[in-house]
Length: 133
Image (cartoon, rainbow, N blue to C red; front, top):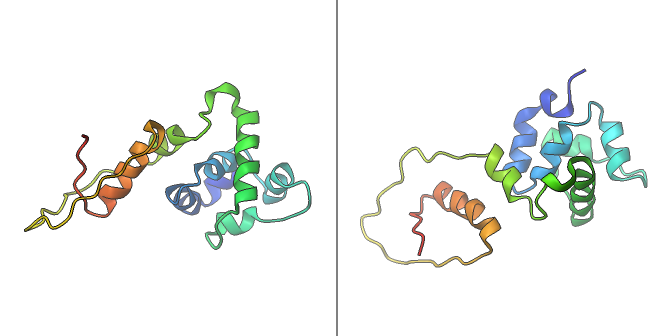
């Protein structure tokens, strides 16, 4: 039986690119939306079909529940902030960074080491040059 991820990988990958890799990883462990929803929200809320269908983004309550469930499934292999899931499964290769004719502004982005790779990928998608200082 195919997993939820195998049924609609483009939607789960899209959700991960928006910053929710936990849901993509969990979708690989379930073959039915009902089972996924029951494991994530025992209170009866049915949301995984919306996430897998690409129509909704998860709430903070769902994100916390997903991280707890994924930690329970994966154990100590999972990082608390989950940057490794994002970078390992969403490597973005910039085709060609556009060269600006004139640099008008510079932006400094500071953050924890765990999220710098994600921020770098976002900046490259926006066509920004990334320089490590």
